[in-house]
Length: 95
Image 1 (cartoon, rainbow, N blue to C red):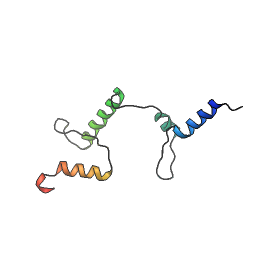
Image 2: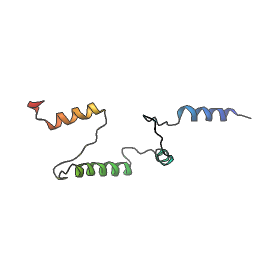
Image 3: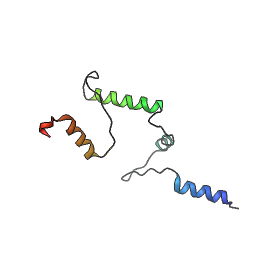
Image 4: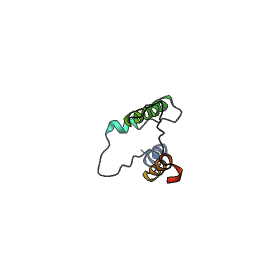
């Protein structure tokens, strides 16, 4: 016997559960899928620590001094990233 609650739950799972769309013919491991089931917000301690670690490592990979340089992750397309680098790195007169 299928109850109304069962139908509602099945519909919810089918249409409202998070989905991961990946380009190309690849698979996502069960470990990766399980890790994505936890939300981290921008104010969570683990999120802040992870972003700090990534910023520090990128400066290190660039061979730059952490006292003189920092890294600021930015969301956007590749075009947006290139534009932000050019407008930051080039003197105003050369833009």
